[in-house]
Length: 344
Ligand SMILES: Cc1ncc(COP(=O)(O)O)c(C=O)c1O
Image (tube, rainbow, N blue to C red; front, side, top):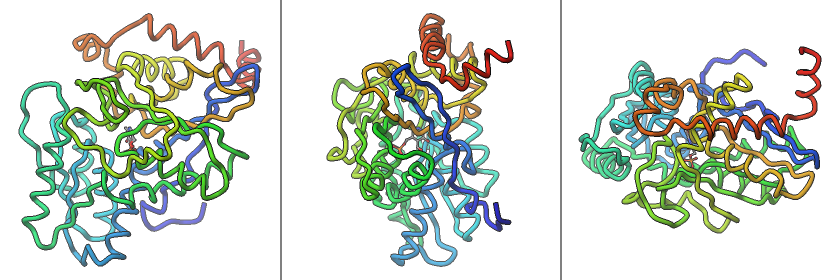
């Protein structure tokens, strides 16, 4: 790698990890987006939203960026703002991971909390309303509005390009849907490059983008809670199927993957991996399935990986973890099986 002068030069070229494979040649590959600066995929779109605003003359020198964020978008924007000399205000709520908030602050961001109503419901719509109102009140401010910003999806075009450098084709793209930017941006660019995968979106049970009853959920950074509007970044025309995963299964999967492989993935990635593993045998033989791991498990040491936190919320389920461990064992890729045999 050449010498770099900006943190954003370190974005991308993230590794592809073979998590699982069937005897019929189907394999599940994880695009490990935690290897980006900030440990998350979102910095890709944060940079693109800012560059797009500059190109369109919406953000002037020394201007002010405002965004509503559950954490990872804010981390990305904090880096880009520091690098390019902007002020950045993140509108956040009490659900955000404390470390994400501390890191945003460390990078110079101002944090504004929406009122804590003391319940478990996500405050997504309250955050967005406040961010919009704050931006409207300041002439130099630009509300990046990730849910309705075309640059969000464009920020992930490079993911598709990187994937096709590493594998011949992607048959199934299966990943979590929050704003929709990462899944639909990657799918759009894959199509432009001549690869048309089956697109399977994953959201938490309780999220409303794929219909069904809304309710509270703990998977962070993903889904659309009841009351929030579904933005334009969710491109239903590209979606072949939407599936839902419980918090219990998503978190059991993140914990089992960590315990079995030493790979720390976040809770939303746990949900996608659970959806993929549970159906691995259903996919046509020889399929290449790709899941984007939007962030790493290190951000969830106080939640998903904390037994007390999990138990207090009735999320700890040893049987669900054992089931995932069994699937990981059953679908161990041949190369890893051979390595294990050598060690033992
Ligand atoms: C933790 C987490 N989960 C899921 C996602 C997917 O979100 P989106 O649909 O907004 O791209 C992201 C985005 O990178 C994320 O950071």
